[in-house]
Image 1 (cartoon, rainbow over the protein chains, first blue to last red):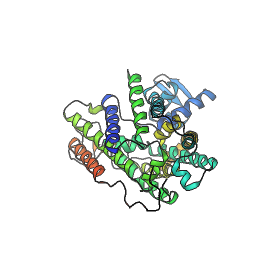
Image 2: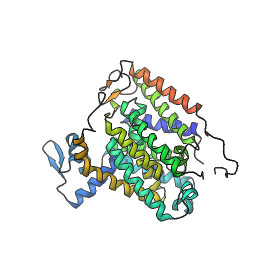
Image 3: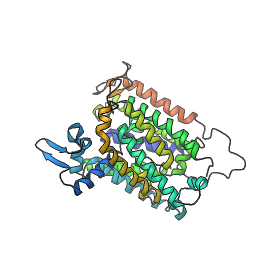
Image 4: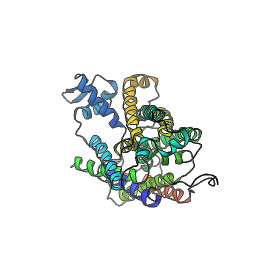
Amino acid sequence: MPLNWKTGGLLLGLVFFAAVLLVKPIGVSTQFVILDGIVADAVSADLVTKTEDGYSSTNAYLDKSGGKYAKSVANPFNYGFIFVLAMALGGFLSVIARGGLSARERRIPALWRANFGDSPAKRYAAAFVGGFVVLYGARLAGGCTSGHMMSGMMQTSLSGYIFALGAFAAAVPVSLMLFKKEA
Amino acid sequence: MSIILAILIGLAFGIVLDRIGASNPTWIGRMLSLKNLHLMKTILLAIGTGSVLMFAGQMLGLVEVGHMSVKTAYAGVFLGGLLLGAGWALSGYCPGTGVVAAASGRRDALFFVAGGLLGAAAYMVTYPAWKASGLLDAIAGGKVTLGTVPGARYDGLSALPGDVLGIVLGLIFIAVAFALPERLSREPAAMQPAE
């Protein structure tokens, strides 16, 4: 059972506030691009090159906004990337601290099992396809649930509201179609 | 210094995402299929709390207005939002919670992250076509906030004082969090209780 919404909401709000107080608003999905870039740059070294006044890339997306992403690919030890690694570690420690997940839950989440049975292949295929669509969508939108929806709406940014509208307009019907049974 | 903050804030974010159930696809699915809105209440309270603290902090001069980072509005934001929403419902993960779930031992989340890396790579490759389509062109002023925030480098969609508006909207988010019922429909009698 998760934390009561009053405690959980307050804590989550404090984390988003701390981020904008001390550094900048939270965002995650860019780092999928940066990791892709790091891997691709390791395979073909001419993807990102250092120029006189920064970095440039043969990939138009990494090269945009004055090579902002190219720079992060060349220097993985940057705020955004370390932030996501620390977030993963935080999740790991938190789960360990509350006794870890059951083997059953690690294999397939309860709600999925209640609706689609015990086939891991089916669940893993859905998660893979879901991941592809989520990150493709997030990059097209220029942000994800953290950057656009939480950080964006918190700052009263118009783009955050447009994003949230789109996300829920698709998520609710798809979820209603998929999950008839409640776990 | 910024790396230390990245570690501290990142750790806190990961811990809280786990503890509120956001990295558990079952709780995401219950929320998105409108069966149990507990997580929705959490999220609304968080946005409201963050908003009130940030804008009140700005008015008191305690929070740098320059730390704000407002993203551009364009048609692709809505389109991308639709895609993300569909994938979020199917997988039960968004980018941040998927990473947290993978780190917490959920095997399906590893597939989510792998799919995500491929999806992000696909976007990197197809980006020029989106750019050429005009769907990435700024609308309604681009990087704008709903009101005009004093001292911010962003324009306001309206001339309303952006900091006051931010606090009012934040309070509305908090009020909705309290008003929203945990369940919209009564639990079917034959159903086993949720955990």
